[in-house]
Amino acid sequence: MQLAVFILVYPLLWLISRLPFRLLYFISDGVYILMYRIVGYRKKVVRSNLALTFPEKSDEERLQIEKKFYRHLSDMFLEMAKTLGISDEQIKKRYVFTNVEEIKNLEESGKNVMIMMPHYASWEWVFNLNSYIKAKAYAIYQPIQNKHFDKLVRDIRSKYGTTLIRTFESRQIIKEAKAANELITVGIISDQSPMLNRARHWAKFMNVLVPIHVGGEELCKTHDIIPVYLKVQKLKRGHYQGTFKILTEKPAEVEGYKISEAFIRETEKSIREAPEYYFWTHKRWKHKDKAPKEFQNTLVANTN
Image 1 (cartoon, rainbow, N blue to C red):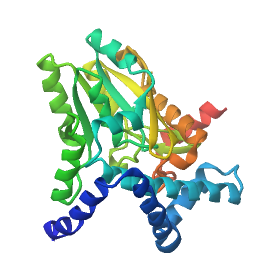
Image 2 (cartoon, helix red, strand yellow; image 1 turned 120 degrees about the vertical axis):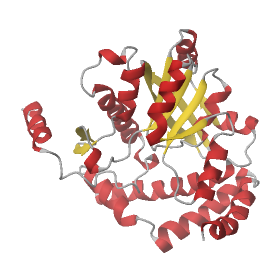
Image 3 (cartoon, rainbow, N blue to C red; image 1 turned 60 degrees about the horizontal axis):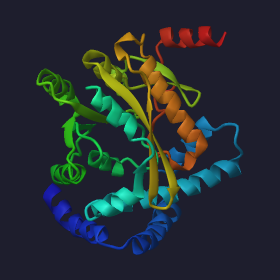
Image 4 (cartoon, rainbow, N blue to C red; image 1 turned 90 degrees about the vertical axis):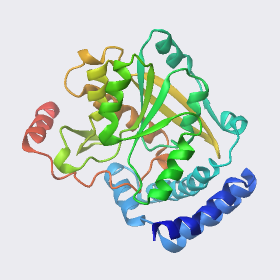
């Protein structure tokens, strides 16, 4: 069944990847109508998330964010497929970095880097970074259940030299790379909701107390990897800009889970600047009422 689905869908993805951008976005307008106005894909989840995180906004303001989000989501789905056929010249023009010298300077100092980013604006074209750096690039990801699509995703994302590694194997692979004195850059998307039974830390995200991922921070502290936040802005349709911000150059000296909390704060800033580009279909706040008492008490104490 998995192979049959792949055989049916792959030719369509291939065709989309060969379309000129003008036609690609014409189709995206149709996908928006289908997904938002006809199917209503995860509309209840999106509205619930927006009401929870932007209680100060009116219904009309949240509705405008919602519509803009679905238009962006339609673009992003087609841009992901376009990655199959996009040229090096096109991607460098459409996804630019404002201060890639920050990463190059860390490399020159022999420092390993972790690029921490949320599901915001565009995360597929960030692999273009490999065109500018020397380090061996790894990206931590969650495999897709369909093994054929999973291979396709790995092939697409490794197009620029990135090696995709699964979450459960990341610690061992990074440990081996360090032991071999390999200069590495690791990419991780850290804004998802962790499984409740694996949650080790809770913090406020968009003014809601939720569990947050801390695996990236733990890797940075264990292996002296410099955590860097990648702020991505959508300049216009199909054009993005990435800016790096070093969260700390001495991760082992940072107490508690302050690096993870700093990442969340930076993510919040991006969301508040342009909320329509966040991935609102995620059930990011599904554990909001399940915080252990020690975290609830800490929150109350900090508020007072």
